[in-house]
Amino acid sequence: MIRSRITGIGFHVPPRVVTNHDLEKIMDTTDAWIVERTGIRERHFVEGDVGSSDLGIEAARKALADAGRTPADVDFVVFATTTSDWMFPGNGVIVQEKLGLGNVGALDVRNACSGFIYSLSVADAFIRMGQYKCVLVIGAEVQSTGLDLRTEGRDMAVLFGDGAGAAVVEPSTDGSGILSWALHSDGQFARDLWCEAPSSRVPGRVTQAMLEAGQQLPRMNGRQVFKNATTRFPEVINEVLVASGHTLADVDLVVPHQANQRISDAVVQRLGIAHEKVFQNVQRYGNTTAASIPIALTEAREAGLVNRGDLIVLAAFGAGFAWGGCAIRW
Ligand code: COA
Image: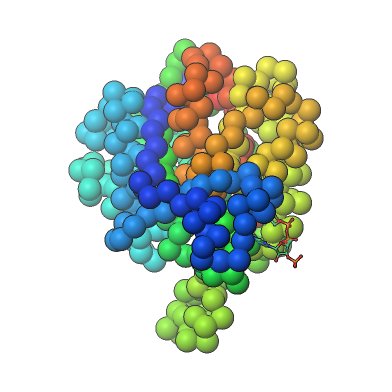
């Protein structure tokens, strides 16, 4: 039986670290408020003319090296981001060109925080159907340039960071690899975490009035996100475990999308799983949207928490609302 296996992972964050104390200097917030409500202590922000494709390419190079592969081996690219360099084309073709991948296909996924899991499922399907043998999956975001860093925007601005992570996905026949995944969405909540402009509904895509109202910046109903996330995370984790014939007791590590420590704590409590079985690094990166799972997975492996044969569960929830999970025999 052919499965698909993650054979290499890597991440890249821009060097500039922005602490909660740095944010205190530019908006009315406090380190204590941010740490208590989110667990976040610092995040990375790009400087100058750096786009999410640049971060993604660095992460991709590391993932390829980790897999022992070169750009010549890659036969398809899936790039997850909500913050692509341009409105179109998406970042996939930028990676194709800059990494010198030949004329391979490049697909862009815009599913925000669940983008990496959606992308992994696409890679898995292509590999299992025999279409491709080496798929490069990238999640990368530059959120900082779209944040309102004034007090008016503090509810969102303190949460997000920039970064990228990548995975190389290849066929496996030894029983390891992706065992199951589940994808869901509920568009009734689309306006609870969204960025309205630029919009095809608007002649010229964005008006002065929209700019003045900040409609080109992301907006969020934090409580609605929190309420739904804490229900959907445990639900989808159980779903992929049942689909793979496992129970929570079999799980070695859950690597959730890093949105907020309080969300993860609530998930730990609802699942009744040991705290140390749910990986967290949101303290140092904030929410990096599509990049957060591959960044967390790489750090978890570096910490010795992801080993061959382990049962790893990935789960994500975010804008859409869209959410998903994935069970992997590493
Ligand atoms: N610093 C200081 N005060 C802040 C603040 C900040 N960065 N952001 C908001 N506040 C204030 C609010 O203005 C409000 O003040 P008021 O009571 O005087 O009106 C107060 O803190 C409480 O705000 P509230 O929005 O009720 O806080 P909360 O307990 O719901 O926490 C979030 C806010 C955003 C931390 C929380 O809703 C959350 O974690 N939501 C999920 C967000 C998320 O993870 N999104 C991405 C998902 S992929």
